[in-house]
View 1: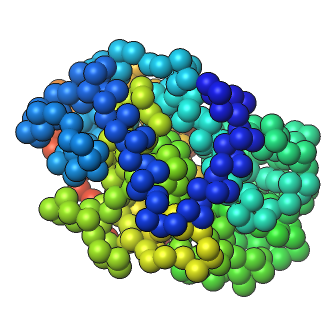
View 2: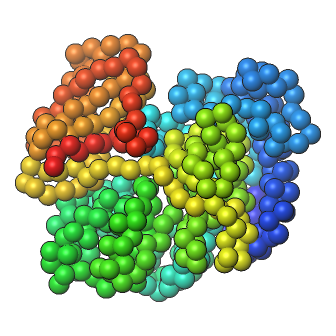
View 3: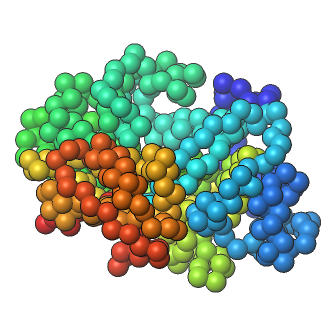
Length: 434
């Protein structure tokens, strides 16, 4: 894989050096990249120029970090309202081509983002970095349980990007909304050594394996992503599987944000491609140990100005790590937690709600699904205009197709944003069955 003159092996080699730069050099490494990013979007992205003007920043300062500090964070709703002005009118050749991703994050507010060739290159490198840091043997069998897998699949290797650089073992993949009982059987038949899984899905597997230990594969690595990992889940995994959880903090919009270090438990920020700030309510940096909002600047995205982007999560800044890597750290990730859906037969699975198709029917600003009983699911929507009966029917049909025909889905509408849970987090799917 190449982007401009940079290849994946070359970038991987560079990362082994930048991750151990003197800590004082990290910002010096980021500074020219940030200045170039800001200047590009000033020149070619309408919404960013308007954002600077609205913030009272008539021109870029000599210190790009000073300019950054003057900008209020970009909210998900801001990206929705920017429309075509959120896309740069020009893209350098090295950043082409682009690809689109659509995500609801943990907030239930759908966002569409274009990611560039350089975004993809760094995502590939950070994916492999995760494997290398955790010393996962590339010859091992890997099972992945993901939302973007449509059916049970098998392959002779792990696929992109790892197989571009390394010879790997076989891989198995299946969709996250597969009932837990079926997941247990497929994993047992394949016998993976590495499992890639969402935390709530892992909890369902651990519960099933505890009931029937004879069906538990002999895992050597458990890699989680997509949600907060609780201390309870870490303890359960170590007790039942005999291995620690290896967590990865990422988002669809910006890719890998931080990788957990097995030496300390801290999360190393991918500072080669991102500026990550933890901000308090006054948009000031939080000191070490104080929780705040995660605000990310994607240094590689010249298509969309994800600059001081409030990703919707909370985290705590961390200290220097004793492992020798000097990349800045997060002590704890507090954001993103969802619930498993309960099926009428008593099984549990990950809820896929079909949000990618909502905008085919109506501009949904925010949504939330609440499962009240084994049959009853409430579909809360936030829209500018009241949904017509026809739109409601169409949205319910999309959700029904994604969740399954066993549920009675009803829409309730709101004009104001949906409130967070009492713990400060927002869950796009809430199961209230106890």
